[in-house]
Amino acid sequence: MVLIVVVDRDGYKDSYDGSVDLIDSIYYATVTLTTTGYGDITPVTPAARLVNAFIVTPLRISFLVVLVGTTLEVLANEGRRIMRDTRWRKRMKDHTIVVGYGTKGRAAVQTLISNGVKRDSIVVIDPRAQAIGDAGNDQMAAFHGDATNRTVLRRAEVMTAREVIVTTDRDDSAVLVTLAVRQLNANAHVVVAVREEDNVPLLRQSGADAVVTSSEAVGRLLGLSAVSPNLGEVMEDLLTYGEGLEVAERPVLGREVGKPPSAVPDRVVSVVRDGKVHRYYDSNVSVLAAGDKLIVVRPAKETPWAERPGADEDDE
Image 1: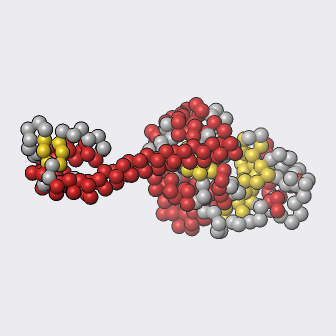
Image 2: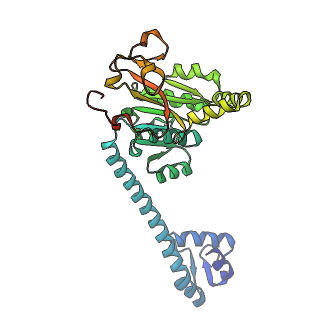
Image 3: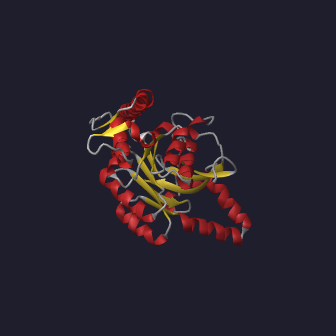
């Protein structure tokens, strides 16, 4: 528009000084395309008027179409988001929130799904648009934003969440997220991944129920693999779901009550009684009781305990 007026500036008249220069062209283009039209600069020659009729007017209409269209699109998208959030909030309760959908977050989600957690009960929060898109492609609800912001946590219904898994890239962010989560939900089980061992006490003071030191865990696995490649391979196998061996938790079956952990077909590592973990050789759990849970090592893809042949109501 500015170029058209500059090239044909002799066809326009400025009521102020009679001539049109570059600044006048910029001013005329602005007030014309925005349909303001003060009338202080006008086309006076037939050629300039024809240009305004057949070129400038379509430009003005296009500007209005883009302006109005963009505004309507933003309003429509926001309206759809509000309606979708409202419907989602009505049915979301006792869900799991995963903060961060990077390598650790994806692995955590895959482990949850492998252990029977439904995808529609998992909510992802991440500040990266690509991660949000990936979570959506994986058929999970996702919120774009910083989880240190309580507004984002509220949108994810953290107040009714059963569990929150924090897998941020920075330890300071993990601390802030944990504090915010604990302030909004005092009952949720909060699991946090942290890079440095020195930050573990700080995370626990912030309200984390479990803290996993990712860098130290990787370092130990590397050390085991260096000292004994076979031992490193076994440990990696235990941490990998879907093949080989896996570590799992299951309730004690009815026919196992009253027996020692060594009598259980699965390889029992620990016994959970009254919320406390006991090693399998602990004298306090020398005999299994109803309500106990077992931490076992078993073949991957094993039939869930409730679906095993012989499992009955007494077993449950």
